[in-house]
Image 1 (cartoon, rainbow, N blue to C red):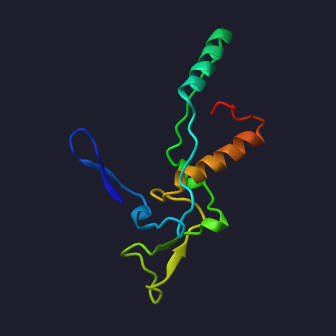
Image 2 (image 1 turned 120 degrees about the vertical axis):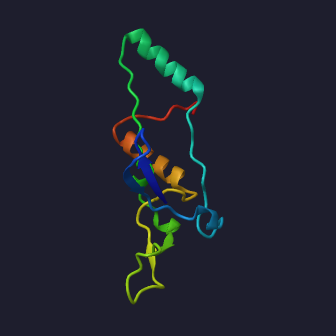
Image 3 (image 1 turned 180 degrees about the vertical axis):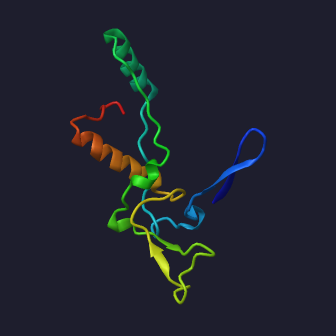
Length: 132
């Protein structure tokens, strides 16, 4: 996926390139088994914000733009991709690449990121709320 980033005058400032999977070509039970990832309930956020306000705590939010790229694919969800057009290795044009980490547009990317994040957070001593 290629994009041209422009400034306010419409001049191209830089090019952004991202390699993404053809998620629409994935087949259930062949390429992936599960896609669901848990989400927090609104009531949980409200409770946390209420507790923080009552104690005068500082609340911060972060956005990790490349979050899905940090998730390691489990062995049972191995994915393969064709070489990018124009970047084929000479003499190995029909070879494919085995993904070691998740990339954008994989159907299971959200669930795998959630597993990675949950493992890290529980490793720090946090616990998931029973209501979520």
